[in-house]
Image (cartoon, rainbow over all chains, first blue to last red; front, side, top):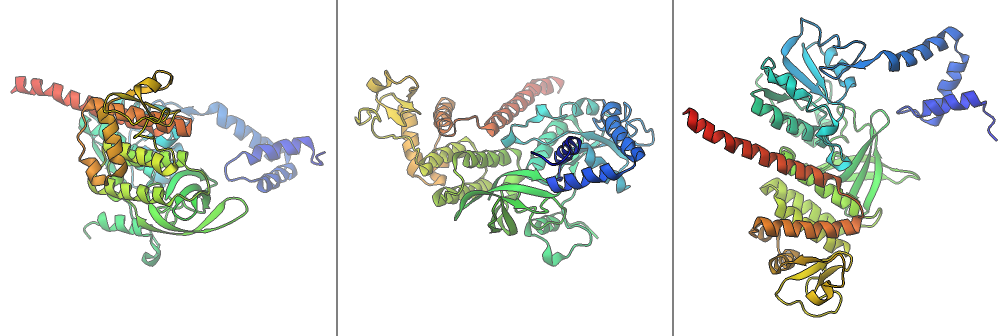
Length: 199
Length: 260
């Protein structure tokens, strides 16, 4: 027989389903919530409900947003000739933080993973093509993760967009800033040498 | 070599490694998804490397990894990359955890190096499928009828996945899953079992024979794994889309000529 009260056990169970949260962390979070003030708990509950109820997918870029089209797609200051293709909505904030990119996005919601049975039809790849047909977009930046599946997805999209006269580029592969060359792995260092540029 | 991987936690991966000494096993690569992680590139699929693991009660832990060959040419081509993933899935599905299979491991590395050097076509995939069956002990019997033991005559015989090899015409009638097998198909399969990869690549097959061999070998593999091979449908899709592209390119030629 469990000694934990049923509502706490339910909350621990709910927290432990979150990524990166084990049973111990879930228990710690549940007891933290229990000790919080009523206002804080209500805010948390309202935020969770609001997350599911008020968010929509932007019909142009398929980013998660609070309105359709999203703030990026409806911003007239954005460069509409460049579209950056990313795997998931959480890839957009790091790109925005760089302040180096002022174009539009397209979120695939996954990658082609042949061994898991995930193909292009399970992603938002076909939805990218109508955005390129009007001729306004000149470049597509393929910002998929540098993994085998990310590369396969990027190469597949390149095959689709190149015949449409759109330039396909991908993010450079190389050494992270502040790292030590001595401890760099052979593959990354090799790619960094291959993609070296004039200085 | 990693044959499967999954994301776990914030920055980790669970990797299924196929190794020469310890066979197939799963291990955690801590921080492999972090930029700058030295483990990350090594535990990605289609990277041949040397792995140092700590045995633990649950999943093992990968502590160090050194890449020996990352097959960069293979990874730069969508078709070759997809073929490599298909080979990884086959190995993953057909092997059992903790059972070393050194000849199969050696052949996997050899064939990936060969694809990296000379590209990949359907022949290479078929040779791998046949040798995979051979190394696993499921190689189809191709000299004598598996039912009556009679030496196969140079006429159209049959192949049965459930019986485990070729059947003479008389025995084929009583076997429900026996499929007709041409003399040429039998000869090619026998040749591929003993030849080098370079010799195997030089075999010229017409479309009918190539699809006959593909069908026979796929039925055999399915008989072993008892489930669909997911990456196969991706290969079929890539081939059909490539054909569509070629057809559309051909269809534009008359228009170009007309416009000129």
